Image (cartoon, rainbow, N blue to C red; front, side, top):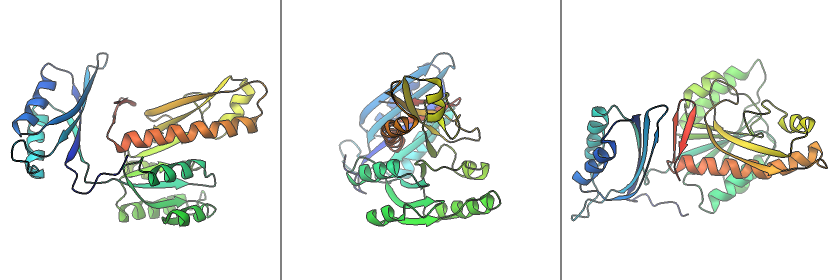
Length: 294
């Protein structure tokens, strides 16, 4: 996938609200009335929660005239329909490329995977910044031409250091934070500064084996499959809305070191898929769960 040009004329609308008749028609008629063409549409209804979700990809070029619709006009029209149906909504224009920061510690496999996928055009974003609590991975940032900042974290300095990190993220206009095996528990102030915009990779198939040594826990239980979970970080450790999971077969012959080695392959693929789906506007969060559109 090649990053869209700044003058790209496509957009994605994400919508969620209480389920009721006529929602699909209301959104379709909205775009038709504006002279815009729907390129792709998908919807889901959670009958238990009585919630409706929809993702619409559409062209911003007005039918017949070919000119791109004025953004203020589009936002006003969407807002009018959304207010009438009490919808939560998010409009993403492809010309506005998201800016992503990566948090790391000393482990590099997830970092390398994200950077290589970004270089090949698989991830729709810019990556201007890597933040770490250790200097070890700075050569990787230099290799990819990305700014690398180190904020050593101790129990006594955590609050102050995280405040500096938040200020730096805002300075770099960061839209998404990815914890690529960042071995620190984020404080409330960091999570509240970027709600639903921090993705973490946990080296376990949650909710099993929470905490810092899941592979050793898995070994002690003699599991036959290990896994990884990508989720949004919340105030509850390892309990945020899950975006993606996968597993890897293991056997009684595998040592804890083998489980760590095999688990790394699962971690990087699970994290990269979750990040790509978030960037593509495919994820909606509700009730500590997610809807992930294909």
